[in-house]
Length: 440
Image: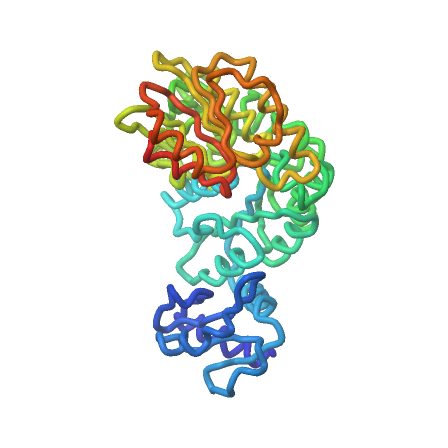
């Protein structure tokens, strides 16, 4: 096994890329034939070689012998071991980011800020699990000066595993909420799982960045041994919300400067929602800590535009969409509803909400809370999509419409055009509410 890992690692050091998908295979790459519940990439090993891969790592011992087919006991474990070995070659700051909500946005903001001064490596998209993190680490090369690694989890022990793999010297937890509660089992286990990052950083004398306004996170830390950010003037890195109509505008203060208003840097972001304040301030704190000038931080955040239906403002021919359809859990859903309810607009306001998935036993109660809440608010249109919302029985006002899936909602919208609205669109990734955009 060690001979194979050393051989493959040498290829990576010589410039080979890593691939797990033959549809995206490149010449001079190493193909890892991973297995999942519904696929087995071992069967594509020869195809990967035909497309130019240097070698294929497989764990199907029945494959024919071939000098470019390297057989191991477990492909995933080999990928992880190789990534760990590769990571240990680099003595640069590595920043680990996890949390229930906002970790991808925070990661991208941190990268935007740090890349104004450093050559950075950053997690692509949401490749933040036991496969994505190793793939990120294997992209490290001698040009990188700082790495930002996003880490996700839905079970206790996963963050501990990923931090041991990544060995970050600094890190932050964006927040802790009811995300993936089906896998974790309880909110207490979510707290336990996410704070495994703190445990690693505390045991290695790493640097912890924390939102001082988050009581759950602060209760797990000695304030004197971490770097705080947030809205309090007692934070090391403090900021304040200036406006939220419609985009979030904040200002922050460089603690190395005098504390009068002239030293507050104004930032006009392209992000929606007060809940993004803490994500921006995390990037500000990390940027200032690593010596990025306030003017560069301002420019980086102002030039950052959200993608993938995360906190995006979209104008169609007929409506204004607050598109936040990439993910949803009770914490993020209520934060989005808070922000949208307070939004001032001259147009009619409506909601298109999808199920919050992976909530396990608390799913019914959490969807009931959302329904109870929005029934009290003054919306002109409410569209609810998903099996969980369909389970809730209540006297539906005439402006409420509930559908089993996005296809049914799409069909209804085709026959009932919606125009002149400002709409909040939010739901879990699996509901795919973005498919409704063409009918809005």
